[in-house]
Length: 51
Image (cartoon, rainbow, N blue to C red; front, side, top):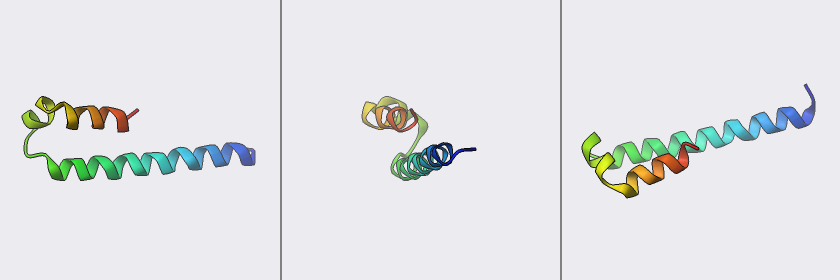
């Protein structure tokens, strides 16, 4: 594996860690699944972080 490939993988893993941290914070802020789906602010942010 080349150094560039390793670096790309490492960067993707860092992004995944960020996404998971953001989703954990979001999980603390919502009270129910219904509230999550009904509030486009929460739902939209979760979709954005997950892509």
